Image (cartoon, rainbow, N blue to C red; front, side, top):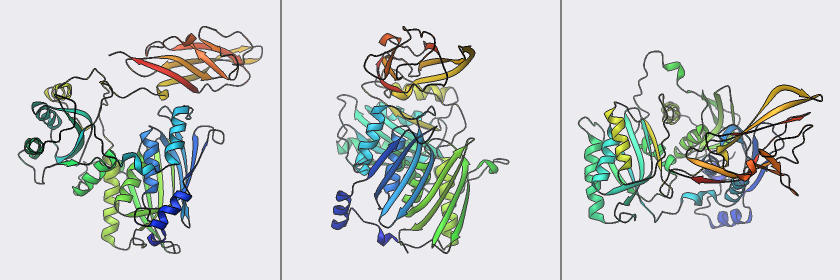
Length: 474
């Protein structure tokens, strides 16, 4: 029987560390075997949490996991993931593929194991209420703190946030103990409000744990999974969790059915990992906006789940983990030049107009929002219905979906661009000596001005994006 004792504790076992170094993860990225997704195969030394580390790498690159197969044999894990970009296309961006390969073939856990020297990380938890985030931002602005990055979740009338702060005056981390205690005092007053039956907390964190994993941990510790009351008629839409025994293999089987969404696999595996359960085998399938997950697990002590209370807790915690990121309402993306007090002004406008912020993600980079990537350049292929010399005609639209940023020097993989009739050379032109084509003669492609061209050939051609540049104006 496999047990946690079979796992190599890389952190504490010198022999385990040696084995890991001699047997680094092996990663194979395959864009040929599946028509609709990029297949990533990972073989690595078995240790607790390694599955979560791999999934974390993929979701941090904004990839969507559509299928997964998880297995273990002896001291090895073998994982297969079908992934797409956020538009449902295969991943062709060489920068992203190289990053996947390089990161997974090293130690994925080191990605978030170094404390940042650029900001101070704080964690907040308290009772949620309308306008709370606006009040928090106003307090931080009054205390001369600038929020450079952050994530905020709400669930079951509770709020949790991980915020990264700098000193407004110099852009440096806030390290003065007296000032940090002052920040804590005022934030706890705001978080507690008038009716907080639970303790409101603010802590300064080391920032060593992935922020979304930390949010799950904070809400789990706050026991947000308890006492959920669903309105009449809502119960069928909740995630369905079933727990069964697999006596012949000494596993507990966990089956989840829910609506599909990005990062779903991360949320469930994160919760199982932090509850000290090991996934030995599993399958994940998505389709028609539904997701099916099946896991064969044991506790780290090597035993399956035997207590009815433990079963109930796992069901509650997995449902809560899925629901924390599932919100009804309007999603708004806002980009602007950063300035002191901007976040406070934005959240105040929401509050004054009677709007509740249920989840938020804040990011600044060189004074602006998140950078554009190759996934923001979308290539769409459609049949026109016209036939030329017996071959179908297709129209290709190349769009730039990165707001306020212009794409230029966009190259697509085209292998000579076969066509039985001339193609508009200004829209797309093969680059001599390569299998690439340049779009719009390398000129800028604004977000509202897609480039279109037509070609006629016996079969449709793929045009994956292989290189690009972005210039942003705010």
